[in-house]
Length: 234
Figure 1 (cartoon, rainbow, N blue to C red):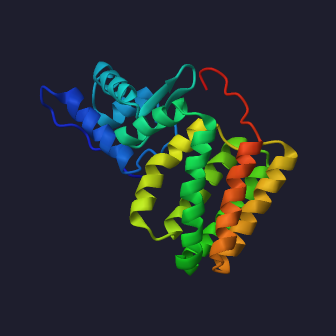
Figure 2: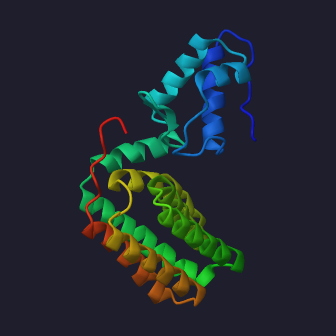
């Protein structure tokens, strides 16, 4: 497992720790959505005092990279300050506006993926479909949401457009946070899975139009199913 750089012993120990932790998050050491290690574990790993660690974590919460959840620990909210800003902006936007933006990005990316995907990328999409089916069969909503996010990022990466990939890496978390997750009644889940299979089939067949249509239909399904309310503090 990748280790966090320990700060040098200077007067600005807390500032160094903020920079080290931020770099650790930006490079994927702690992926977005995951809970960071407990306070005591970090103190032992980094060799810093409790007050220094708390000051650094508090700064990262203020920057929007971390989110402290009472009774549940601290979670990674965004991988960068830009992504944090986008999460806040999307969360304040009208739901229809967020859905329209997601349609623009994912419809184009899906069409491009159909034309440019590699065999390895196609294999990854098939594997993610299988993971999604397993999560749904086990009624693991958290796992299903995580796999769904990975699936859509994989489609965007298969587009071969580096700028689009970078933009989506920032916006993907913001859009998911703003929309609140998947439509999760039994009928909606079945349709959702079918549309994802349709999308992968179109990408495999290099059917640009079919891939774009499937991607648009996935977003429309989200539009038709209001996300369940999120309890305060979750």
